[in-house]
Amino acid sequence: LGPEVFRSSMGTVLDQWVLSLFVGCVPCRLLERLWDELFLPLSGRAADESRRRLPQGLGTIIGFALAAVHFCGEQELRGTDALAYLDSRRRDGASPEEVSLEAAEAIQTVRKRLLIWPAELDAELWVKVRALAGEFSAGDRGLMVLWEEVRKRKQRIADCTENYDAQLMSLAKRTHFTVREIKRLQAELAHMRQSQAPDTPRGVALDGLSVESFADVVQRVVPEFPHELCGRLFQKLDAFGVGKLAFAELACGMSALSLGTMDEKLQVCFDLFDSEGRRALTLKDLSELCAVLFRVALSQGVEAAQVASTDEVLLPGSWSP
Image (cartoon, rainbow, N blue to C red; front, top):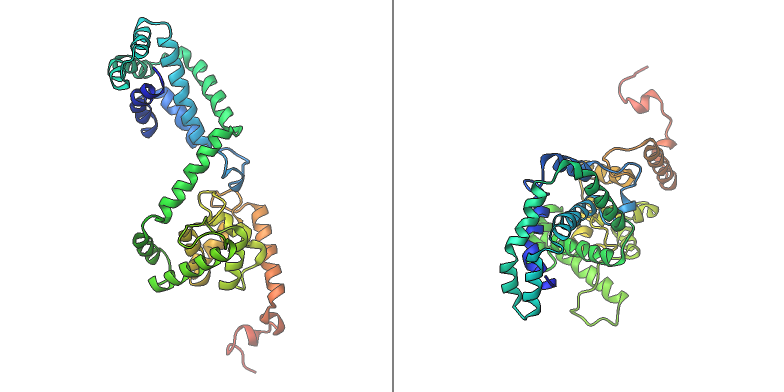
């Protein structure tokens, strides 16, 4: 079909498959198995360990779609008169639009074939799906570059980077900062970036905040925050695993640390030690949390430790001679 015809004709089929997660596109038994593969998490993998790797669910969806195209398209249509005719039309100089219209019936064959996929061939299909998903998880260079661009684009959308007013209004609602304070924070951040890259012309947007610069900001805003936890906090705020913080991510983090309620600060503390990202602390996480809190208490000094823990101190007014 050629790349242009394939994109225009198969694009509608692939969009329907992927955007619906194959609902109504495959037999129920395949759909149940596919959703099990998507939503059952891998055990023993830390949350931060796989942030920059292609997500398991996305790899499964892509692998299933490609396997379906392979079995229901390539194998079904290879060597047929219909495909030979389309190939001859393309070679004779027909436009991609004309070939796409004539290929509609053949493309429908792919869709229908998957919808009535026979149960006796399920094992062969899943072998192909797992093989393709394994290739993706191995870290194919081209695919990882694409995934990195997707993560950056998602970060820009969440940050409202291309709409300054929308970004201000969004942060004013999501944080404890006023609009004036947000503008000052933006100005300080821009000055910091410019000082780090003096050769960059003014007005040119620079990348987000690095972990080193983030640690400097944290020590300025919240000097009592343990320096050794800055890297871990950076990873938690870097929601898309880009490796640099967008302004919205920084503002939300600084708001919770400096102006947040007790519940917000406790949530930040909890998230820092939730190593598996399961909203539950393991025994190892809890031990590490206690050790860090103990070190912080020792470094800052505990005033209560300098006062005797008598009944008079603990319960003033509750005892009289």
